[in-house]
Image 1 (cartoon, rainbow, N blue to C red):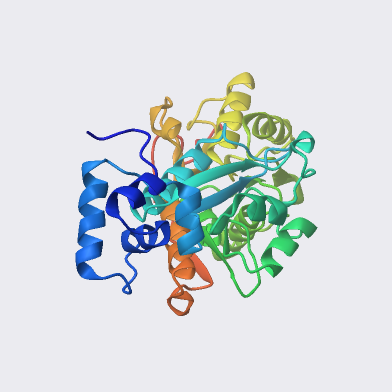
Image 2 (cartoon, rainbow, N blue to C red; image 1 turned 45 degrees about the vertical axis):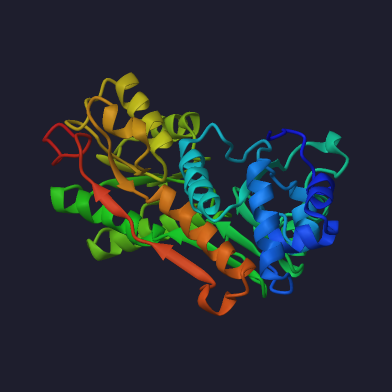
Length: 349
């Protein structure tokens, strides 16, 4: 009768072989006689035997665990943002299909014995096979130490350099450029932006795309139409309120995240402006909320689960020794989704 407490020691005793032979048979080593392997596998199935992760790791030299670091400190994104939910879902689905589990690390917890970061120490302690980084700064000294280690590491919107590193991102420049060009085609000439933190890949590249879009449309760059935020609602609201109070306010705003676009919509309502009649607004990310706003938010859609899946595929290839076929940089396309928050400017706007 199968036992929930069956151990590799009991399996070895019942099979009449050593523990090492059982382990090697179950892990597919060729130096085990076929009849012995068959007997061990049949008995393991009868007893519903499941090898422990630690025992398996001793033989395979792998933990089959992928570490995910997300900076949850003040001023950084966290799991409240739906972008990271969907990226994690992509990582989990792809890594899970390959037999890997995810271990999520909070990077701002000084009471954990590792200090505020200590990525390498945590990876070594938990014996992770590879790492996904999100929401961290590539210039962080602890990130640099991780990139200098032999641990395969890939950043999502975190540009990494090193022998065993890579990064995956969306085409943020092209996305923001599309947004500005869309507004210019509608007839807008006073187009502002609320950009993200410029020390991040997404923040810097979306601002670059905004500049390129203005240039492509033959529009000048105006300092008062460029304010920064942190990708969250309150910063978008504050920036939009300042712009809308100008003597010559913008007729359109490109926000570097859907959350900041929601903040801009709130500021417009408080100023007594209609959207899109008096003000057009474009977001970035295409989170689930965007389609359910009234009116629906025009936005740049990222393949968020695709980013996670691409990160996981790179890790699997690198862990399996197929690094030559794992590109050091992957850029996914972005699609402009036109909904109800953009229209041609009216005579009033």
